[in-house]
Amino acid sequence: MTRSPRLEPVTPATLDAALALRVHPHQEKNVAPVVTSLAEAYVHGETAWPRLILDGDRTVGFLMAFLDTVWNEEKDPADRRSGLWRLNIAADAQGEGYGRFAVDAVAEELRRRGTGRMYVTWEPGEDGPGAFYRRLGFRTTGEESGGQVVGVLVHDPPAPVPVRAQHGSVAHDLGPGRRS
Image 1 (cartoon, rainbow, N blue to C red):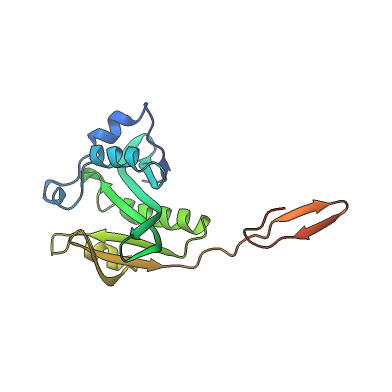
Image 2 (cartoon, rainbow, N blue to C red; image 1 turned 90 degrees about the horizontal axis):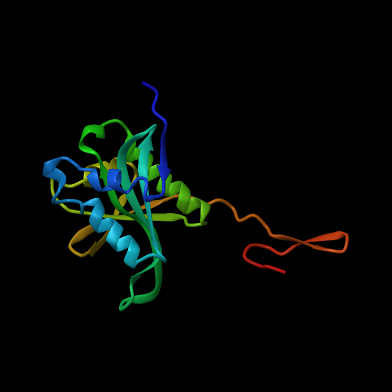
């Protein structure tokens, strides 16, 4: 069977499918339900990036990324990070590559935004998702966040595309981040 997973925003038409998504019962202690994530996305609208994972018409998962978030304001208010906040793969869709797809999709979105590191946290222990994240290349940072292990995946962001401005008949290269 050919798989063609994709990410879609949660909309009024897909809300019920998002809320019905369930992980394996033994995983429920490791990840908040989608309803909690959607509430957090509402409250953190500037930095939350919630998406359904669909394959055809089938809802196979949910992810939420965090984007350019102050990590530990008391320790370093300039430390801003992005990464995978939440990953819920439906119990009947696990082991089919959707988790890897989700991590790759968030990494690609972060690269598109010019970010070279992707962070994730997970519940420690044998039943937690640590082995999954390590297989995908995440390395622990030695930090904890809310009692969870912090991992990072370092990837190269794309080279910034120079902005070009037209002045008369001459195009001027303004360099990354500069606007005319």
